[in-house]
Length: 507
Image 1 (cartoon, rainbow, N blue to C red):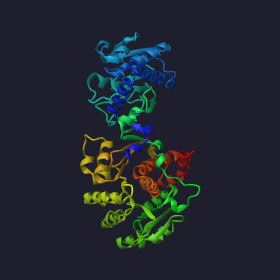
Image 2 (cartoon, helix red, strand yellow; image 1 turned 180 degrees about the vertical axis):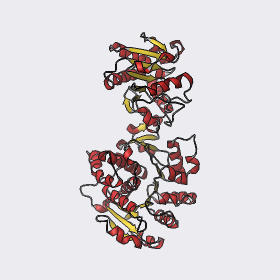
Image 3 (tube, rainbow, N blue to C red; image 1 turned 90 degrees about the vertical axis):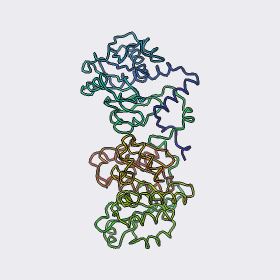
């Protein structure tokens, strides 16, 4: 499965980026040439995105990020800009390409304590990059505090100083940048919170690293965008019909808890499923019938009745959880669907129902994957942080794990694709592949939007898109639908925005 992931969407850890640099250098490109290209990208962003910037301060650290700052200062001075450089360590302590870059700079330079951000129109942060592994403290932390308190815009090199490139965590203190210039590929820290918020706009610059280095690195983390899953997505064909596009089923709760299921069902229909049916208990049939039109409705009152319904093999993707209730009924329904070899999106009450029977769910999911002709995970879990803790309490409380690590380990343990929701939603597969989402808006933080997401994912499963790609595509579409609507969004607005999302996707 991992071999087919799109390398254009790859995210590289700091170690993997180091391997990309070394591979490029061993192929004949000098390290100082890569540094000068990186510096040119930084200088270009400084001049184009912060014009007119006035005086420009560059903060230079002890490693290659500092070398980038020295080289960028040379280019900015050659362009006629008023530049001042502030050094964390004396230039004679630098080594390698950073020392070469520092030797080429002959402009004003002072020690870091002399830096006053209010005296400048732009600050270029070149103190520490993605490879930082220890907390900022002392003089550097004080400098970061002064910089963050000032109104001066900041352009960060690679990553804002103090942000982990691997996890996005703040290491002691971290620069709050307006924009960040990184090179070749983004890193997880650019997308995982709080790193994502500290980066501002992230600009990826081409510095001449060839794409073929990724084949040897074989990355397993990706930015969630169409390049990752577009080729696996199943879209309507000219000669196709509704049965080609699958039949999604959403389980409804009781009479007073039906709205969530209907939102999921409507979203599934809008997101491409050929047919969608709500399975409803008898006491909710009339309530659901009063609101459903294109979505069909059938009674399903217990596990025995569900077994009868499952005899129809065309019902191939299910949603269980939104408004359903978290009791034995949810566990029985989930087990029946997975035992029948169908794919299931489990959310909300469906997840909570298994909080005391986690291992049973994971074993059912493992057996269900064997029933898939392609060995795909049959189960997709879509927890928010609280629901995640109910199934994976040890992972949720492990302070040394990033959100990416937690989702990965949860997927491997549960034999499911895990969608760990949030502003930086992570989609992880049991084989270790994972994607970090960047679409969406803060307006998604409102009741019912997660129910819509389950429906969108179920629609992709119904159309036989592989489970990881189905979940990743659903998360991206969900975010893009929110962007298309804008402020004031409520959950019911999302399905009606999906036509715009598909127009963008297919355009």
